[in-house]
Image (cartoon, rainbow, N blue to C red; front, side, top):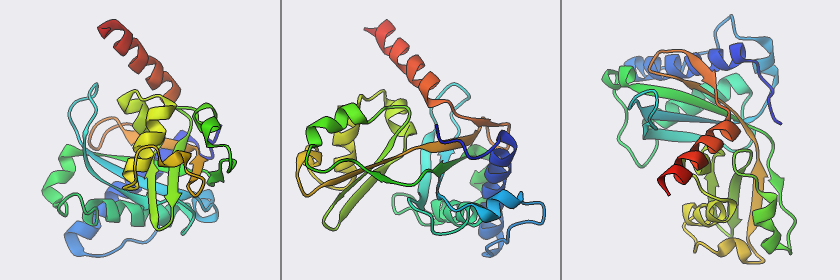
Length: 223
């Protein structure tokens, strides 16, 4: 299980993401890592994503407001969070740039990614059995096309691994069964995820396996 950081370090990163966005929206400046940054966050280099959601209540999934990041290590962790947070708030092409007025109505979530791992080429029909929903995120690559889905996405929608692969292909603007093609690469990774429980509130570490159990139980009761 990929868990490089403590809850205290995760809390630091989430609060830093919020601070970075506030300062950038207010002044246009990219903040520097503060003096009290844990040394490990300068040393480590991981892929990082920031997800911003409109808060809909503690027990409800928020409405996406922006999500951008770096699938592979481009910066050290602390600078990756600063830059991905600003990009999620201002550069996601699906949304207009955020305003400072929105900040009290959104939550910030930081996903720290493990290195990408290529699934064995030549045997794509084995992929659904190798991808564990609640543990893995995926990247689909074919030619110039690429699509990434974070590990929390299939949990939030209660997908199985086959649906996850299909949706990954569509995220890359490819046919849903493109993962069966010999010239398609499927990569997996894990993520440690820290999130505000409410705007400016407590920071928690998500347990996707437990969330998936709840999703399946809800689906069973409705069935």
